[in-house]
Length: 402
Image (cartoon, one colour):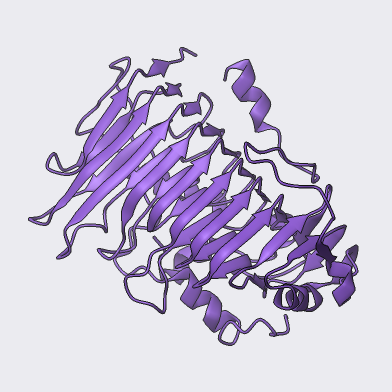
């Protein structure tokens, strides 16, 4: 959920995180626990503003309508996962991305220099536009401005080993490095996106995204890495121009989010979304600061057939995985299906898994939120959750004693 509270955006980042998390840390109304311990609640779904805006709409306004041609202005295993990514490396995946150059078109053909200093955004956008239905190969150290890149229907991008896209120095609290909006049949292999938060002179905000996937269908991200974004590594939401059109049939294999300020992943709304073996770590800077956060903007959101397989969350200030449904109830009845398996979190300060914020007030939200075979430092946190809402089912949890 996004807030229009611009005053909050000007506060110091760490203060914002601490204040918002403190607001959410109230006594539990219910605890479904492995150990039965008394635990404080984790962070909630962002700002408590009742008037959320759309990151896509804000981005369009910032970029003159969003035209792509715009000119810029604690186990040992868990501990090992918390090292900040600093340079691109060849990614691995359960569905391994190809490293072959056969049948590909090099981005350099379109004038992409990839020399680590030139602003290649316009040239790379031309390459994306000019290779629809073919495989575009990105090599070298590409630099772009915060206007970002817009992918097309039938886009297929492959990053060569060691290739990356990094933002140039900027002053922007909202951007989308790769926008996948209202398109279909998109494949991106081995993407390495660096949001360069250390080069951002903005004083606040939280809406700088690696990937924004909005109202898209049949999208496959294979072994993407998103680091140091001002907001989320991956942001998923409905179409902003086509009513009742959620992102549908998205598969993300082996995603790594590291050092993002707001979330590793935000799912605002989606239908048939699958993450396989993601690692979301070192999330800190602005609330909610979770590895994965389910945070509907309003009653139009859907959470249908959401599957998260073998996620690892580590050192996330707001918590590993958070479900906040405060804005979901309304005139449209909802059935939620979220299934998480083999979640590991033994190092996140805000808790391992939290479900919170649902007050039905006569509306209908049902279904199930499940987590099977988790390994957590903290037991499940349930806070301010209407008992008539979706069933929360945790099976075979292991609580790791610190």
